[in-house]
Length: 266
Image (cartoon, helix red, strand yellow):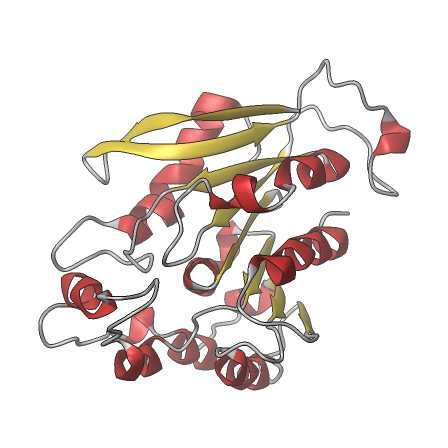
């Protein structure tokens, strides 16, 4: 495998932005027996866009997990972009991060890294705020993704307003970010509400293959159970929900990403 950390220029964001990229190599030492059962090396790898959380950066997945090793086992490319505290939105007072992730980034990756980003080969996943971002992308543009993974997702965006005036800890000052994202009146449009999107799925959206998980002791557990209940009634092509004991931390998400890849990369 090869790993690159650097910057690309985004026309959508009007600036350079950080990107981490894991790519299979033609010269990689593993043979077919080193891959997950049933897989063979592909000429053009499948692609996973992997999204970070609120208090993280693009680098967090490759610092906190063995994602490069997991990518090798499954013979996939992994793209890890930077969105700061944008909550994957086209911001009222900021840049268009949702458009960047959902529209520009796949095209850039196909052009620069020659990876597969067609609907049969592009996946998206993330943790916490990134879980929200993955859900927003997949539920808005279901025809673009082969699978979606949401780990401990911050799926209750309207409910987060009641908890936004945090005065201490890693999320201190989140209310300022929300005002930059949604405006001073904090008016959240329906298309940013994961519950609303899940309740208004069209027929194309029901083709989504989706994985959700959240730790039973996670402060977002009840929010995720509510979304699970909605999605279970939607008639999705494939919906896998799992949970086990755990809180909002990297030991849980390191297991979650492995579970997602094992189930959906075949």
